[in-house]
Image 1 (cartoon, rainbow, N blue to C red):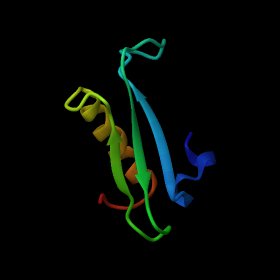
Image 2: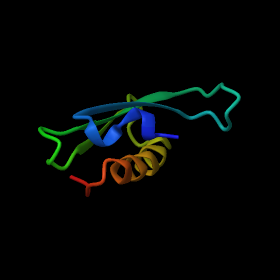
Image 3: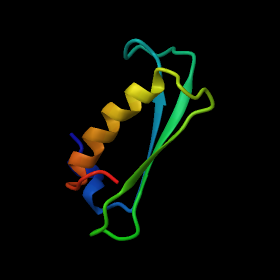
Image 4: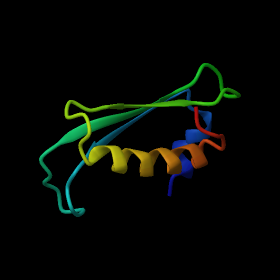
Length: 77
């Protein structure tokens, strides 16, 4: 599913997040998960850009961060 994206070859990954309960759309809040690294050998650092600090988006972002780091085949910053 993710193989065509070649995430392991990216220096920057932007992942928009929404708090919708399902896949049919909706939700009331958006945030952006950013993974960035200096080189393909470097460990990426993850940042959550969220205007509502402490929102449930933190838990959603941590879930995606874990999965993206696995796809990028490295540990966390």
